[in-house]
Length: 594
Image 1 (cartoon, rainbow, N blue to C red):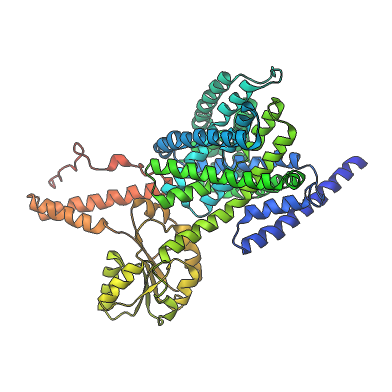
Image 2 (image 1 turned 90 degrees about the horizontal axis):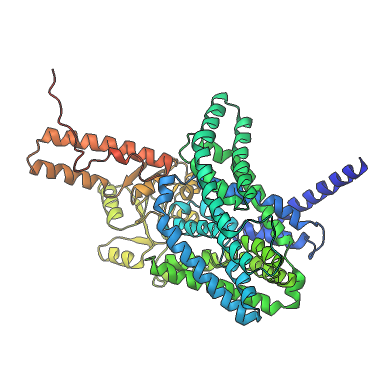
């Protein structure tokens, strides 16, 4: 009894220390613009055994906190309809495979020459270093909505392939093992069969068991039961994969995909996300606690040099591979920097390599420290990328006026290209006072030739809008080219300027889907109305009557609106594609009345 009370006291004390350290450092690093992950890592390193020694048992905490990665992959799966996942197959198996293979071999060569290890030991260390941090990158992609952009989908595709590659990496390490074979560990070919069988089994379970269970729970309308059912689904799928010696995160991801078209998808996400946030934070605290500061102190230059080399090699290789796959240079650079760190699965594979007698415990500890330092560098690399973007876009803008020099006006038009010019012309035709903002110096100078005063700046920034007088404006009109704006990015603007009606130009259907749920006065696809107008006029020119052309227009608009609504709800661009007109699927003639 006394031992139980003592254990409870220790858990309570450790919990207070962990939460207190997390609260302080995450708040600090958030204020510094460096993100929560770095705060968690620093908090863990400070309170861990090699720091102040306030909390021990980092391994045990890590084992529990890894459930956070499982929950994360489940939530990502909820956002990916199976048809959308199928469309990513080129990025998953092409871009992802190329990254793992090329980076793994390059890093193995680096370890071989820099650390003077054997070939087997170099492969056992270099191949795991090719993996990136799913726990660090995916929350970032989900938080700003960029997981739904082409760049975000590429990053996710690579991370998913890395997760799938764990099985062959385990097989490679086992094949090189110098230790006696463990009879409880299946051979590589058997793990491959287990993977296929588990995926098929989870797909069938999702269709014939999980979805019916959630329909039953939904009819009961008990939220607590819904949370229990959600957590049970995640943990059960992960437990099946764990029993088969496979990736638990992969099992949770498949379960999420199977529920992506469920009507309970949004409620599941809301209920499970808080658990994911807490456990992921605990995971990074545990990683920080396990950081071997003694190993760093003994060989500080080697550890720092290898961490920098790891980042440079992975970023360079991924940049080159992305360019080979047709990714524009800036996006390829961002992708390379985003995935340049080592990942949490490296810890697992290092432990396996140690058990296989391929590397010494000191080497596993040393390279684990290198991985942790590389993870800590990611916020700084993203800051550098943002700075580089701003520098290259502002190199000709030093002499331009910012919107803080504008007068208070009724409307603010952000983006003065071909779309914004038309909108501004119509407002000025009625005498509406407007402030024009654009981020392209060449566009601003061209507008000046026609007597228009356009102010320079990024009109999506809250501070810049406030300086432009958005607090008193009646309307804010975003006429920006491209599909960068989404509901999450607009949320702080809508909250800061509730008096202003916000209108948004949408580049395509994907952006309309990304804007779904935002309280906007209007969303306008940039070529929709002109395309419909041209189609209607072409029909008349081809001999169709005016009334029939208008009927076809009405039917198309109705089908398009229904399809767009379904696409926004499911996140699947191919949703209701059967309602599209095709050469063999024309609109039937209108029946005569009577």
